[in-house]
Length: 557
Image 1 (cartoon, rainbow, N blue to C red):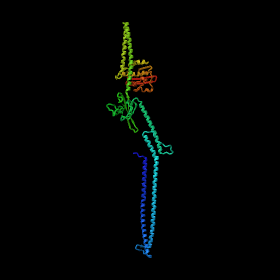
Image 2: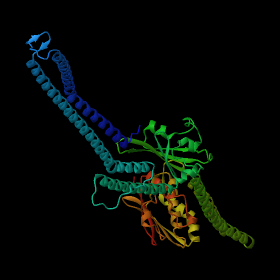
Image 3: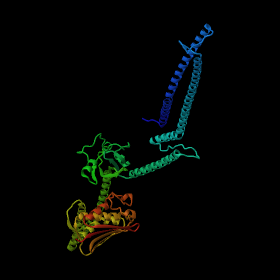
Image 4: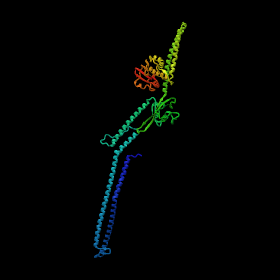
């Protein structure tokens, strides 16, 4: 229960005043009550004695007067009955006078003491009144110097507690004298300034971090140990098709529209999986309720943070990628590659079939003009057979390129593989004004591995080189054998900027030179994977405007 300091001071001063008053009264009573009672008893006794003597004196005077009337001359003996002599009567009168004086003095002393006691009581009463006014003045000063500043501090503190960080204490103008409370209020305002600046910086940082994660193309979601969402970006809201704030909601409420935890048999729960497997990260595919036909690749990893008290807080960070766009780009890339290959195949077969047609027409002309020239017929038939073999080899090379997924290991010729790729790309290169040269040693170079993988690697590198030269140029492929087998693919294209050169082998990082040639960003990542699979290394050198050179090295054994 709140009990203000003002009330405390009032009640304390009142109780203290009453207590001290009682102590004063009690002490006054203890010190003077006995004396008063004794004086009262003594005065009463003297008064009684005085009254008795006075009564005896009156009686004696009356008797003496009566005797004188009856006996004008009489001699009194010392004692006759109850009568006394005149000498004794005079002494008795003197004694009565003395007692009367004593009684008068006693009464006077009693009056003086009573007056002194009354004066003392007045002094005590005046002291009590002065003490009361002193306490009242003290309370007023305490209220002005202590209670009012504390009340101001309390009001501003409540405003700050309610979130009004712009509240400040209204300080008086510059004073000649200042006390501790003035310094405290100045310090309190300075503290509020620091708090407001700190909160402003925190909000600025939070806004920057939120904008940062909002700029990430993947959905980002951060969960605590209970599965509550504490951070989410715009892409995640798009994936769940909702604009409602999901911060503080359960993960299964926002993504699966469920009221209870997802069953383990139907959904992969990152909280449970990371807790049981104790892995650094997990990957899984999931569908959200908003778009059940979209497949989402979710990468989840734990995040452990220590708070100011040293307590470890456990979170889970999820990166959610919508595979629909990647699949669409992949299909577009495949269709583009198929169209490119179909153009090359059609051109190759068209050339060979055109040659066959010309030879056939020549044979027909020879046949109708001079049927006896058999050597000429054999020559033409040999050329037809050769051209047909070339036509058959074109789809065979295409079929070999399609065997990318096979894992069979065999020894294959590098010269033959590179030549097949050049044959497929030669038409496209010539159409764009690009000349292709192939330098190879006399010695046969071979590798143990998957030939289709090797051809796919060369195909990707050469296609990238062709795309980098939209206005024509030259593409040189060099194969050499020394301590290692080295393959160099160098173009005279646009080149790659230095700041992007380190990232070209990252998955989904596309370095297309135009929107027409923008791909999925997987080509060079696949190339690097194939090179490492064949126990090789790959390096790249590039200068913007001069061209790019990829160097691949394989061990001899």
